[in-house]
Length: 342
Ligand code: PLP
Image (cartoon, rainbow, N blue to C red; front, side):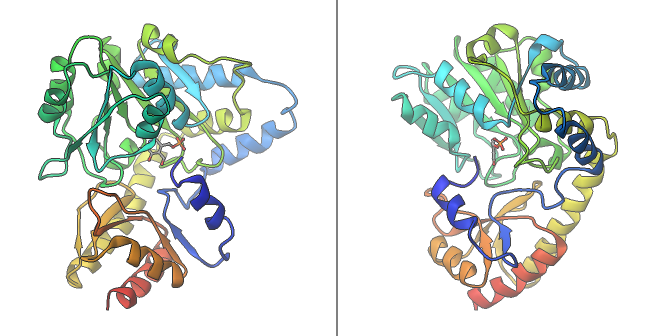
């Protein structure tokens, strides 16, 4: 998932008053309806309760306008992301992705010796779909994260459609929509409904505040999903499934949370603009700041102030990623950042 395991174990030991804005989590946690549903199912947790998974999956399919067999639920989106890269890339079928981009697919590709081709984002921080398609006639997977992690920037729907129409035969688009609800942008699931070679990934770890509870899904044509199908018992955590299902039924949740997070983000941007700090405008719950010196130095100095910010990408060595926390957390971020940057 987000932070590397080693980083996670360190973060797990930091003091309770530290600010953790390093993993694009949602400090609001699950909505009350999800929390209540989870409480109510705990005592039944001795059963596999496959029906809860099925009900969640069916509601998500209905809401996305696809048939139920086009949705495959998972405990988060990391699992189907890894599986898709393992299933659709190979030493002769590369993974093509944006740079800077979310690295999980890259690590899965390395695991089986698949080549990874990274293509710089455009000047407006979108995926350069033309350069991505041109990069490999043998590609197995084109990975687009929309809005992107780490930049929080959008790739236009028309560009995504262009890639789908022009990518080489036999490849798929793996469209990671982990942050789509935060952006208010159009979903990519209509491409799935139109039976394109597209797998959309969704997670409940971000806007829905369920990173530790674990729920997500892959949405795609059944013949594509069959390649990443469950093995073993296939049972998913009922807490995650029932919490995700309850969240989907709260119609006001997405716009309300999107606004809360956008307001805090935009307040932080106003402050950064006033202070003359350079950042990439984001529509997500994280953003990149150009600290004009090796980013890792700033990450370390911020940690000494008990403010844990995100990591640095090789392609952008002077940028650090900052997740959007609560108002109070961002107030602490501002104090620490000003001190570190002075
Ligand atoms: N995709 C992107 C772009 C992410 O940023 C993350 C986590 O941060 C994930 C997928 C995986 O998250 P999870 O397994 O919690 O759904």
